[in-house]
Image 1 (cartoon, rainbow, N blue to C red):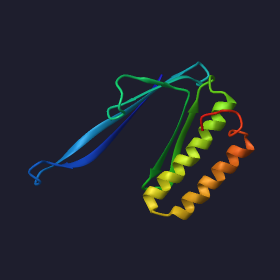
Image 2 (cartoon, rainbow, N blue to C red; image 1 turned 30 degrees about the vertical axis):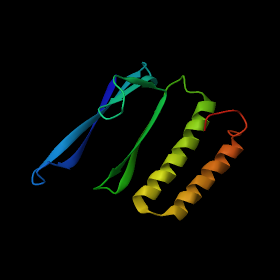
Image 3 (cartoon, rainbow, N blue to C red; image 1 turned 90 degrees about the vertical axis):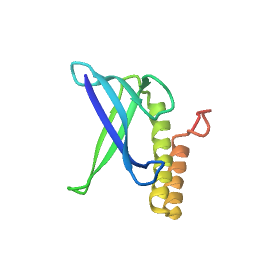
Length: 135
């Protein structure tokens, strides 16, 4: 088993406005591996997720920006239960979310549109719009 713990801190002003405190929020991932180190189960929970307890997932794609090396590090995991159809839907949704995140971070709606256009072309090529999928 592998456990990842991600801790997020935010500066929060106190009511008096003078004192700054850090709020710590934890995101936990638990990945159960078989003897070949293939994920069998992915569980996660987060302090600020809006639900109590642990949720089951079939895949996770985590990207981190290494501020010293200036490269993207990634961890892409999926279980044997994840079907190709689900992976197609998942990738489409990742691209749409990536476009929205990019736009929020850069205020560049032109690039957001380009990424979403590509996501729509991918969905069309994968026939996601015509299969009754919730994309």
